[in-house]
Image 1 (cartoon, helix red, strand yellow):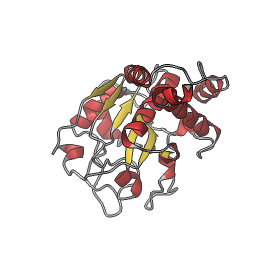
Image 2: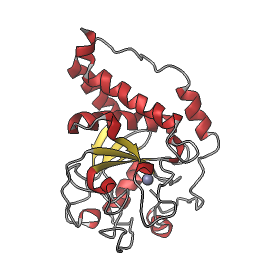
Image 3: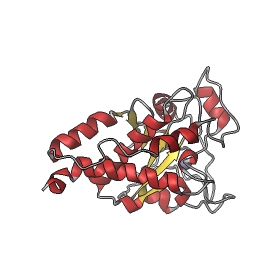
Image 4: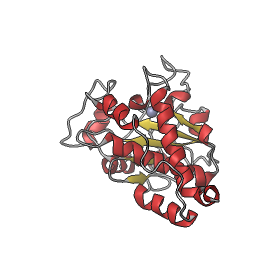
Length: 250
Ligand SMILES: [Zn+2]
């Protein structure tokens, strides 16, 4: 997702903001490749009870609920949703952590003009923002967000997760927490791994190119490739560890 720069500048007081929000920070991609070039720690399925594994996953996600009040800003229009997909984004904002994004959403600071074939409500909104310390929920997963493809299936059918990439944060920790949260949401909502997709997956008919390079640090040359498959592997690892370990241990 790309934010309206001027509005964000007003909200994120004191924070400088990169306007060329396309390239990853120097070394970021290499760090990710380097991290995932080695076997996952404890890669084998563990013989622990499902309940304690799920509890451990929840503890590590560190989920805070800080909803945009119903009837305001991004939740001004409430559209019910039965989520079938999970869409992964990165903020392309190098100044703000999850808490600042939560504040911006609650203040109604992330605007986008309502137009035919474009934004439906005049605000951006999504379900979760993740950084290297916390995951914050902004709206119920039973409501449609405005984060992917306007009136398309990405918004109508998917839970939106934004990964922070602010300076000084650990992208690898943020990615791991995002993989954990995705696994939990798959379990809670009955969503298969095949329906975990990058923002790139949802074309935006009014944009050129229609498929966005998002989340840019998990794509290869702007498209899903080895990094995206590795991310899905991490999601699957957490899912199996938390929810399928009892079965697998038999
Ligand atoms: Zn995006």
